[in-house]
Length: 289
Image (tube, rainbow, N blue to C red; front, side, top):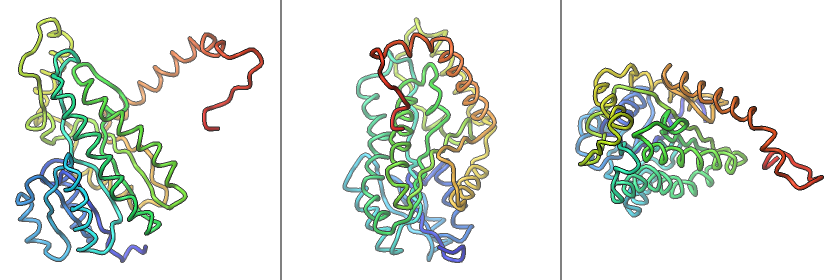
């Protein structure tokens, strides 16, 4: 593909936050977009502004038939899909013991199974094209877990796990995968998209309760600019050698770097205990190596 050929983007969760910023940036960049949302009418202004390049499609990622219908609508409208962005999601916040069974399952249905369904449904098209780029919007919480965010972080850890595996599975098919790990950005994540338990337990007030309060207090004060995040994602898509992981924000970079140092230090301390578990004389190497 040459730079003069517009890319076709398929973006989930396009009505607000990163999805909205990215949809606007992609259209300004001259590309084409199928922007999906549970309420596609919220995108009417963009469709009117870019009638030939933008199409809004209803999509609740927890409904498999809607996923397939949205992908078909993209092919029908533009003939191909070049970039798939799994952005739809929200944060279920609370101590592990506080979050209800129903809330946990719906969090996974949206953040994990919804994204997985989109990828599995679009891969036949990308394989046929022998090209494409999948951007999975994770979080710094997909690399580092925090108190009060265990359920949310678990969904993002899962997203990173199958993204990392998928990247290895499809590299020879010229399909690229990038995991995007934002820190605190000024979206509605800390507000409308934050789901907390109806009842909080006093026993967790000083741990998860404090974290939940911090998230609420940060709403509207996050340092990250979603428009700059969108520009960074476009830069990654245009790169000949895009990263598997893209941390966004100094807070994400510093938090991830600190965890890497901590894991390495602990690994070194316990290394002998770890390696002494093999059968005598067994030859051991890296898994998959």
